Image 1 (cartoon, rainbow, N blue to C red):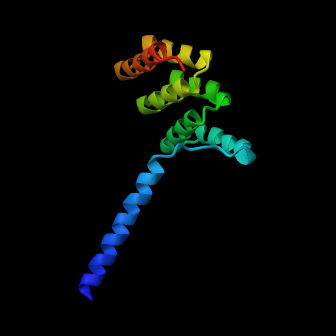
Image 2 (cartoon, one colour):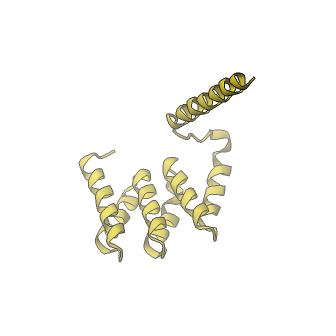
Image 3 (cartoon, rainbow, N blue to C red):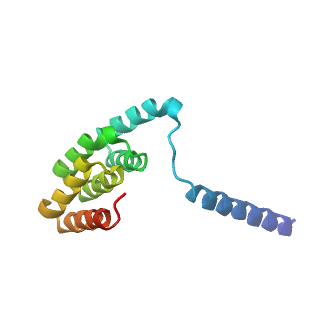
Length: 133
């Protein structure tokens, strides 16, 4: 009985790793039928009082390349007191890739108060310069 339990546990653990590995290989995609609702919810997430929700929303807006999020993400990059949120906003702006978004990342690389944020923004902008999308 104990060996059957160990075998079942091993199979369950292996299946979890396989499912997790498969999920990591896929990029998130917005289905056009519900795009507006998803974007609206993510934009609301940027206005949340919860840091994790704001950061996650910023990340997903960048992954989905939502150009409408450029201005709110620029505001976060310029005004937010949390370095991690500013870095996520910069990454998302880089992924969105519009001229306005990239210029904001470039400027943050020059003028942000945090050396860490400046370095990351400079790296993102140099990545764009060396490998334009």
